[in-house]
Image (cartoon, rainbow, N blue to C red; front, side):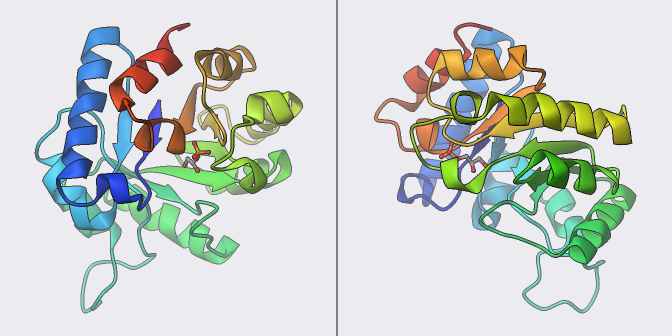
Length: 217
Ligand code: G3P
């Protein structure tokens, strides 16, 4: 389970650490691996305070050096992140930038979870040999209809098409995931995990929401 904090008002300031601690508690209570993606400004603060995996929301495709204002993979790693999202629907990169980012991250090392909007795009980004590919149809992001309900075939197709490129790349899916059944169906359809944002970050009771999402696993 990957919880993407995005830039929602709920996680500004102390909210990011509070939510990361909740994710850590739920991971300990359920035994399920929960990773968090805080924004860059809170990355080091969160990563130094929890034991669960922390991913950056993005990094820029540059090595360390004279790079004013850029968020290099090396900075994310030394801040405590073990990985990064790449090419999220809200932070698109060109194919060239995706390849360069994944390549630099591999040398750090920093795990990469590259987002794709279709099964074909998922297979395309798998050729860069990232750690994970995440299918996220942009039109479903932030809504109440999950990718597992709207287009279950896109998940099985992504898994199949990525498998044809590499057996090492893990496939996850996300967008509109709001219930435990959505998560269970995603796993049933072959995904190794899910990405969720609004269903947890914006929930009145984030801990209850997260436990609910994981209840059928
Ligand atoms: O990265 C996960 C995210 O894009 C999904 O958002 O709000 O549909 O769970 P949401």
